Length: 348
Image (cartoon, rainbow, N blue to C red; front, side, top):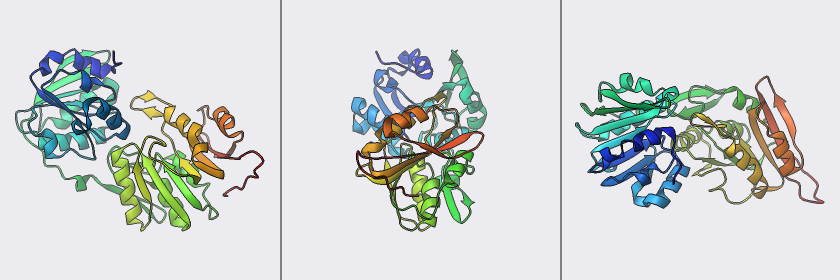
């Protein structure tokens, strides 16, 4: 039996409601609920690469779309939308405005999420287009239902935001990390950059491309590969590189899944949350797999909350680490890949 999130369990309690429906599932769906619904048809729209990969293996490639926005073909022939509310309200409004713009008046809309994610605000945020009524709750999770009464106008260009870091312009979208400005961790990591950095650099979990853009703007010899699981982040990274006149390869991937070859540096400000839950898996995978993607003498450089237990893992994988910078909340770690009887050559 598949393990379901709390939100999916609430939906599953109403599974008979969907038996004769043609359903689109979107938003922060993070399990295999779409495979369990015995509806007439089920399609999934996701902005997360790793979730698309998992669901496509179960439902088939044609049933699961990974893209920034859902287009009209996604809703064609469907009469029901189930939306899993994310913790980021800007992301939710962006996605729901898009989705409601392609579903015709009269379609059934179900919105589900944990109370702490801000699901209650969905009623006020969306009432102009789809008035909601709460129909169920369980374990601090709410399920709301409504019908589309008016389609909103949606233009993705209206949702872009930009800001500057010195002479570097950052382009970003709702839901992307550092949407409203540079976080303290990234700022500390950037403070360790210098003109001697060079060679092939992989920016894993690149977000809006902040780290890569700042690094490459000041060091022309850097060759960039940017990777992220989140489509708005990938789209923002493309835009950030372009607006700054920078070159780089931007790929969708789950940590190293789409990364080939070896690099002189792997750079990251890895997330330690997955939705509402603390999750260190990405950072641990990043550290554990780094030596398979670094040249001899290559460097892993990451920033992390000071309380997170990465020192022992770095020592176990690399046999070394040092703290390049720290403040009250963050530490920047550096570790070098040293082959046996091979002298280390640092990049900095």
